[in-house]
Every structure is written in C-alpha cells, then in structure tokens.
Image (cartoon, rainbow, N blue to C red; front, side, top):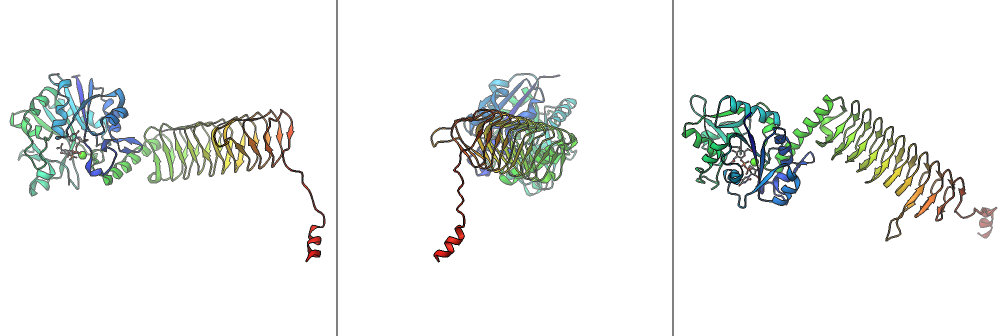
Length: 457
Ligand code: UD1
Ligand code: CA
C-alpha cells in the first residue's frame, strides 16, 4: 500500500458562524467538528496527519492533542495557501495525500477509503470527492468537458450563471499524489473574486499539464455537508444524531422517538435498553443492558450498570450500579457512587455521595458529602447539613441505619451501624451503633385549649 498522508484544513475563523468560538470547534452531537474529521481520518492509518491551524490555534491543538502534527497558517489567504503550510512536512514524499476540511463533520472513513481506491485504480494525480445536490449554492461547482471529464472547479462566487446551474459540487475532500500536489500548489494564484489562493484551482493546473484528474461521486449527500453557518450546523447535528441513534438501534437499543433523543457520539448502550423521548446522553457515558432511561432525562459522563431505571432526572459524572431506580425528578450531582439495588426517589438531590447497596432515599432529600452504607433507609425530607458557610463536612451513615423523616444531620457526624434517628431530629453529635437518637423538643398538649380561647371572646 502506498504511503498515506492527510492534511486537515482548520485555520479559518468561520465568519459566517457569527461566533466567539472558532468554526471547527463548534460541536456536533457534543464533539467539535474538527474532532469528528480527525477521528475518521485516523481510521485511514495515515503515516502523517497535518492539521492547518490559525484562528484559535491553541484551542484546536488542545482539542486534538498529539493525534496530529500542526502547521500554522498565520494569515488565512485561502485553502491552497493553507495546504502550502504543510510543505516542509510533506513535500517530496511519495504517496497519497488526502485533504479534508475541518468543517465537514459528517465525512466517513469508508467514503475516504473509497475515494483513495478510485484514485489509485485510475492512477490519478488528483481525485475530487463530489456529490450532486439539489441546492448547490455556496459550493464550488465541478465543471466537466463534453466527454464528461473533469476540467476544473469554479467557486460559487466566481461562477457564471451557466456554471451556477451545475449541481455537482466539490465536497472539499480530495486525494492527491503528494509530489504533484506540492508542485502544483506553487502555480496557484489569487486572481479571483475573493482574492484567495483556492485549493480547487489545482485541478485545472494538473489538467492543463495533461495529468489524470478524476472525480469520485458519492451518493451519500448528507456526508458532504460543509458547515459555514448555524443553519448548516443544526442540519449536521440532525444528521449526526440520526446516524448515531440508528447505530444504537441496530445494536439492539430501543429508541422510542429517535428525532427527540440526543445521544452524543461516544456513548455506549447495552442491548434491550429502552430510551424514552427528550433524553440527552452525553460525554463518555456507558449504560448497560435492559435499562429504562427517560423520558426527559439528562445523563452526562456516567457509568450505569444493567436493569436500572432513570426517569425524568439529571445525572452527571457519577457511577450508578445495576437494578438502581432513580427518579422521577432526582438529581445525581458529580462524584457520586450509587451501588446496586439503590433507590433515589422523587425530589432527591445527591452530591459527592456514596450510596451502599440496597439503600434508599425515596423522597425529598439532600444528601451531599456523605458516605451512606448499605441497606440504609433515609426518610422523607431528611438532609445532610454539609456546609457551614465556609467549609463542607462529611456525614457518615453506616450500614442498616434508619433515618426518620425530616431529620437534619449536621456534619461532621457519624450515625453508627444499625442506629435509628427519630423523625424530626436535628443530629449534631455522633450516634453510636444500634442506638436511637431523638433530638427534638418534647411534645406538649394543652388540653381544652379551644374551649379556653372561646371563653376569652
Ligand atoms: C470550500 C471550497 C469549495 C467547496 C467547499 C466544500 C475552496 C476555495 N472552496 O469552500 O469548492 O465546495 O469548501 O465545503 O477551497 N481554511 C483554512 N485556511 C484558509 C481558508 C480556509 O484553513 O485560508 C479552512 C477553513 O477553516 C475550513 C476549510 O478550510 O475548515 C474550508 O474553508 P471555507 O472558507 O469554509 O471554504 P468554503 O467557502 O466552504
Ligand atoms: Ca466550508
């Protein structure tokens, strides 16, 4: 197999996005566009990948890390000028170079693989990935001669009325003979409406030199979407969402309403899990088999076991076991660990809390900075008082404890194994194991009170 190289164009500001955030860093299904592109290119096993950076260079580098080499394009003088920045890294090497724009997040490795194959089969010096689309506005048009062979690419802004009628477009992904690419780049000028050095001009240059230039047309139109504004961004999001959801459904996940289910690309879900509408599953979340998630649930960066149910709830950066029942309307805040068979019921918030196996907080509780053992029952309305206005303190509730309703556990405090806390208590001192703690005022009944009130009238 010939050597393979890749150049990813990611230096542009993305003026049409009207954003503080550089275009290629805008997320599609939670992942920056350029990261989607790099992830796909990585599957091609290229020897060297060079990302051209300029606007937001440091942020793009921080995003992609050392999967790529970088070349800085200080001034954005056009896509040919961008590729030229990789000259010192790639010029003179034998092999095939694939060039991809950082703003085409839907491009697939398999399509680039087919493009490279087409290129090699035809022994071409350049091959363009093209597509026929209904509305080609804004894209470069593929101009073919009377024999159907590619002659050149004309940018929308430079195109004549006749050329604008052409609906075969340049997707912005190309394959070149590496040596020919860097030779031809030297001949690109900026004599066009935008005063830019256009990469697509390479096609006409090579063609005039009598080289073989071909096009590989993909039928997957969705893949070719170039994101220049927020309308295209939403479209890319919709397509990526559909693609991701369909992959899960093919793997045996039931998604009741895929159009209203938002699953980011790195999420893993087990077989026979059912996802209800309005659910967002983000980050590196894994969910086991046979779970029920949603409706209207947000899960970010959680690891969830099997046969768990999470309804109308929010869970972030936490570990959640199997056979767990959460919600409706529960909030699992970061750094929590919920072991198997736990129940976290309605209007319960937990934060940085460990819940041992089989424990329950069924209604209206706040449990923060706490270690809860196994088989603990936290009664309705009970809370940990973890914060004195300056510092946070730990509450320890050992195995088998029963906390009566509406108790305040003022941390730091430990409730010993098997102890009881009477309803309505405000616990400020440790409770020994097996004890009953009552910390509330004695009840006083004023007999015949109403009668006395009536006498006074
Ligand atoms: C480009 C193509 C067009 C094609 C379309 C497909 C050119 C001149 N036109 O147009 O034929 O149909 O993509 O989506 O190439 N960039 C740099 N440095 C620069 C300029 C751009 O790195 O100096 C990067 C951008 O960050 C972006 C990519 O190159 O990721 C494409 O640039 P963009 O301005 O979006 O080109 P289009 O007008 O979409
Ligand atoms: Ca573009």
